[in-house]
Length: 51
Image (cartoon, rainbow, N blue to C red; front, top):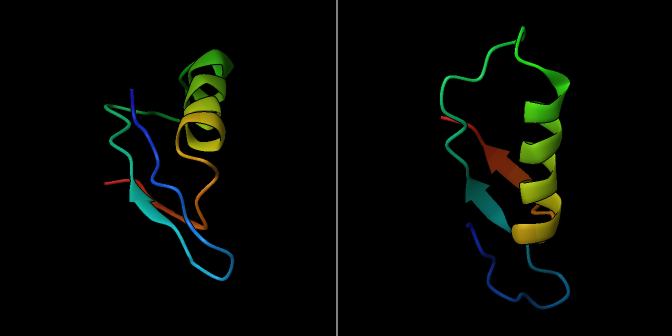
């Protein structure tokens, strides 16, 4: 499970998240699960890179 470092006010968090073979035709539940990881586990970073 991904985790985030704590940050101070005024700091920008940047993360990279590998989403596997994500496809526009995947079920909504897959997108919802990834969004949950970004918001909860990664503490809603300002920039997310999806390689």
